[in-house]
Length: 331
Image 1 (cartoon, rainbow, N blue to C red):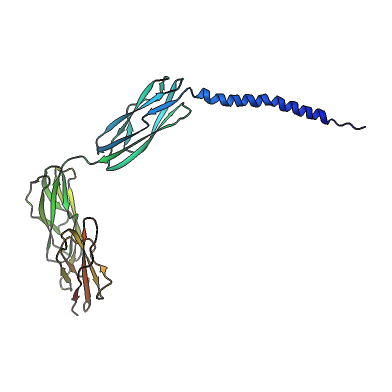
Image 2 (cartoon, rainbow, N blue to C red):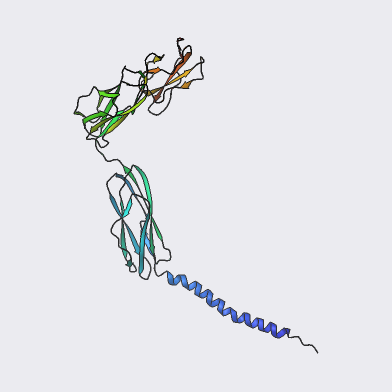
C-alpha cells in the first residue's frame, strides 16, 4: 500500500505562514515607530544663508546664525566645518548641547583678501536625523577707499631707435579719491630716464600731471624697463612698463608718422605688406602709444606698403588708414 501525506504538508505550510505574519507586522510597526522616536532632536537655522555685501579688503564683518532645537530632546552639536576661503568662525566651542526650544548663535566672520565675489558652505553636524545642516554665506571684496595714482598709458613703446640716438614719449599721472603726494620716481633700466617732473609734488583728486621718458639704447636689440612712482597712494609704487628696440646705425629703416583719428585712441597698430592692398601683417610687438614708428626690419631693394589702425580704451580697433609706400634702396 502507498500513502501520500499532501494535506498535512499544506496545513503545515498554512500554519507557518500564519505564524510568520505577526513577525512581519511587528517589524513594520517598529520601522514606523523608529523615525518618530528620532525626531526628538531637530535643528533649525534662522536664517540659513547670509550675504555680507561689499566689504573692504583687509576689513572684517561678522554675522550670527541662530541655531534652534525645535525637537523634544536635547540636541548635541558635535562640530562645525567650513568649505571656502575668506570666511572664519567666531568663538563657538564644540560640542555644545541645546535644550528643547532653546537657541545658540554661530558667529561667522568675512575678511576679504582680494577683489571680487566669494562664497562658502558651512556644515553643522549634530545628533539630529537631518544632520548635517548646511548654511551658505557669500560676500564681495572691494578696494579700500583711499588715494590712488594711475599711470597712463600702462605701456610706453618707443619702437625702433638708433643706437646713440634718443626718443622721448610722454605719460600722465592722475590722482583719484583724494590728493596724492609723489615723493620719488625711478627707472629699472639705465636706457630709460624719467624727466619733466619736479619732486616732491602733490596732485589733487581728479587732477593730472604729465611726465616724460627718454629712451637711449646703448646696444642693438630689445630693451625693457619700468618707470615707478612712490607716493602715499594705496597702490604705491605705481608702475608703467617701458619697451623699445635699439637699431645699429647704417642699416636701412622706414620711419612712419600719422595724425590721430577721433582723439579716443589709447594706442596704434602698424601693419605692413609687400603687396599693394595687402594682406597686411602686424609688425609692432605692443600697442604703440605714439604717432610714429620706425621699421628697421626691412630688406634692401624691397618695396613695402603700410597701414595703421587705432585702438580705443575698450580694445576696439579702427579700420585701416590710407596706404603709404616705402621703397628701400638697394645696397
